[in-house]
Image (tube, rainbow, N blue to C red; front, side):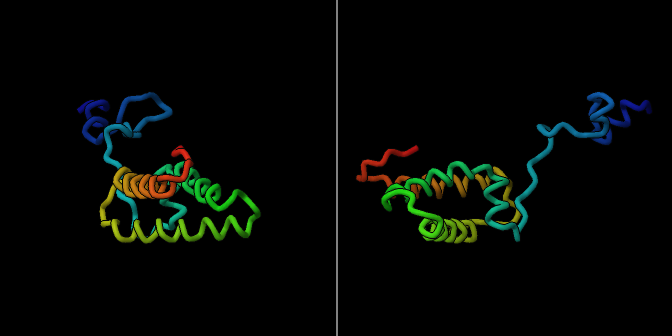
Length: 124
């Protein structure tokens, strides 16, 4: 068996010396989300930080605007607590990052809709 055949059999791609032996990421399944991740890690992995920030900013706007760090934390902490509860309820072992992203994204979207209905605040 030649080297190329051996590499193909082992799942290695011929992408040049710098990437020798590295499988093409588009061909590999997404790794599951590990249990025991922190909320911060989940937000980072799902790429939902900006979306979550939109929700926080809507809450701050409804509360009269930014008035300081203490008030900001009083606004943010309950939001993060509720998101964490939602994740704990909907998480199941073996979830992919995309599935977790949808859990987080759906919850944020629902919260944004609930906060903006009839307020004159426009959804981001």
